[in-house]
Amino acid sequence: MRSSALLLALLAAAPLAAQARPAQLDSILLATPDTGSARRHSTALSSRVHVAGTAAQDSTAQYVLRQMAGWGLDTSSVNLPLSCPRRSR
Image 1 (cartoon, rainbow, N blue to C red):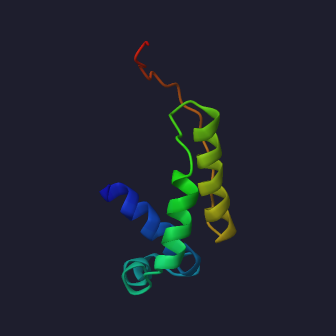
Image 2 (image 1 turned 180 degrees about the horizontal axis):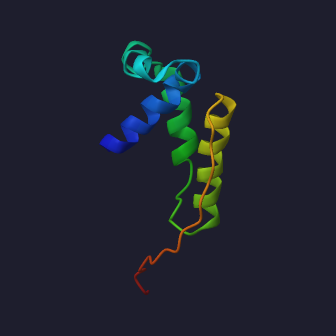
């Protein structure tokens, strides 16, 4: 839950942060809460289950990359091998 809140805070403040020097980032993140933006990102990221290794997870990752690139941040994606045990039914 805490990591989700941090991600939402970063997504909400990233447009301003993209223009800031690194030393200003903390003050921007603390000074610019935007509940509307956080709500939109939360809704977009939680609109469907996105289990690691699935198409839904790839879609979620692409959403985050598009948002960050739109704010002028240098973004990239790396595929890594994943071992994700699943319960049999």
